[in-house]
Length: 447
Image 1 (cartoon, rainbow, N blue to C red):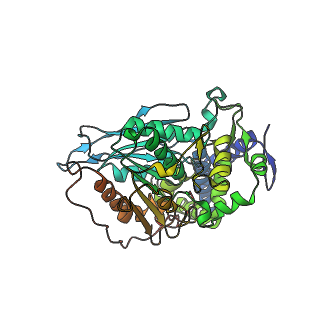
Image 2 (image 1 turned 90 degrees about the vertical axis):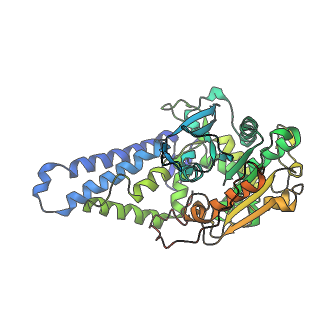
Image 3 (image 1 turned 30 degrees about the vertical axis):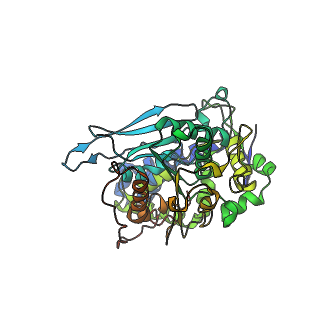
């Protein structure tokens, strides 16, 4: 069995799941023991702390193997009616579905948006707040990638070329009035998919392409992510990170980059922040100040929910996007056929970066502007958000107040006179909201 060699030895896929399961059980045991009624007669705060530690620990480790629900709130119309949002599959495929957020009893909106969610360890629900913010103004679709551990080996492989072909199919299905918003990891592949349609099926190419914090040219600005990719050889990555799914799941035998291994790297990048958040939540539970839907639980229920990626997708991403710079140097191929980014001529391009992004640093995403030589200058736009980290540029305060209005205005500029709203929104001024210790507002936690 292929194994993961960490700092503490060699741990198999099943062993990692056993460790997670054991910690969940320890948390449940501490919660039950600390909550035993007889201990209420003993005036010692340790029993309350034991129960609180158990509740936080059990919840944290149980969330790691649960796919979160979308839980999109109802959309309130101008006449005051609530419109329920239904999440429905538009196209179903083995490795990912095209999902539609259907707003009941609402006429089609002039803006149609396809959100391309990242396949980098988290589920598409990571973009829940992004979807929620766009739904009042747009018809929204999203790519919902499946957990590789649940996909049988018989379904075949899935690498970055297959990912690109999925995007081509999804965009072609939605039609030429689609506005594609690619967040982080899929930005270079969304660019490639657009180039394929521009060359081979121009009637199906999207109206606009908005790339948010994506590694178009990873060498443009070094980060820990790019340094790690350049420091490790492909053989080392294969040996150290790739594991075989155990018999507990439908994908038994499939080679994957486990979500638990990815999560450990996420947490390690901001270990002190996560440790403080965990400890503070334990004391909040002990004092009776925590709640089911508080800020900590809302953030970590999503952050800790991770999924496995197919080994070939992870390795091909590192080898071809980060090491080989195939997109950055316009050398990308799909099924042996070159993908020429200069063929994009009729699609408006916008890039968004965060000044404090430590995942895709400023310079990496904006490289798409120069690569798309066929697009007129007046149909290109770039935005650098001051003070924003990676998470903040698509789901935090910076997105809500500044970036979202700019994106909607950019989409409107590409639409026809009949469909585009007559009045443009202005970028809102920053408010005086404080930032939480988990800090999902400024985006400094790695996703």
